[in-house]
Each structure stands twice: as C-alpha cells, then as structure tokens.
Amino acid sequence: HSNTNPKPLSIGIESIKLHCCSCSTAPAQLMTMGLFACTPLYPSLVVDLRVLELVKTLFVRIAPNTTAWTEALETFLDSRGYELKIKNSLRRRFSNAYHWYCVLIIQNNDHLSSLVDHVR
Image 1 (cartoon, rainbow, N blue to C red):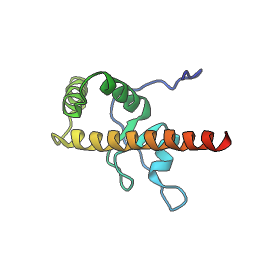
Image 2 (cartoon, helix red, strand yellow):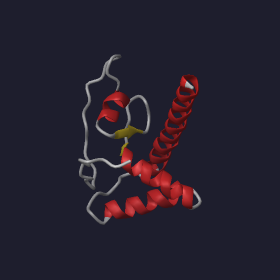
Image 3 (tube, rainbow, N blue to C red):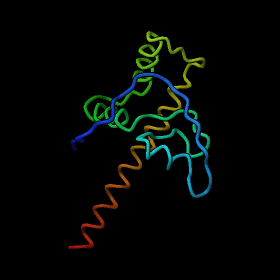
Image 4 (spheres, rainbow, N blue to C red):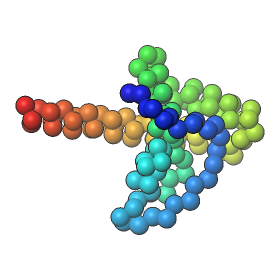
C-alpha cells in the first residue's frame, strides 16, 4: 500500500533506550516506531519494518538466504564506518527478527480472513 507521508529511511546504526513495563513492552513500543525486535525481551537488534518487507518480497523471488543478505548488509554498513564487533551476530539476530515478522504477517492475514468469513 502507499503511504502519503513516508518516513525517511536512515541508513546506519543507532541506540534506542526504552522504558518498559507490563503495559508498555519493548516490542510494542518499537512497533509504534516502525521497528521490529529480534527478541521479545531485551532486543539487541531492531529492524525497520520496511526492510523486513523488502527482504520478504525479495525472498519470494529468489531462494531465501539470510546469510548472504546479512553479509551484504555488514559489508554495506562497514563501508560507511559502522563496524560490527561480532561476526554472525547480525545474521542470527536478523534471521530471528525476519522469522517472527513472517509469522506475524501470516497470523495477521489468517485473523483478517477469519473476520471477513465471520462477517459473511
């Protein structure tokens, strides 16, 4: 779908501090910012929802390969001065975020379909 006021995509790494409680979890706060966490508690990586959608769209057209994707992303970030300290750390965390993003999309589509069926 199109967005009349798309948020500018910033390239890089930044740190986000959240104040969490049972009524305002980290994943919920991050989702309101357009970000998806790699874990529900103490996420060490968040990914822009638009990037996850891009990867999902790409992986429909080619064989899914998060290792190649994250190695390319590491190279891209490294060439811009963002050196990641731990190799394979991005791959593991990005793969986790991507997996749960896809699960969320599937569950959301199933829920919407059941609502439409119920209305009919």
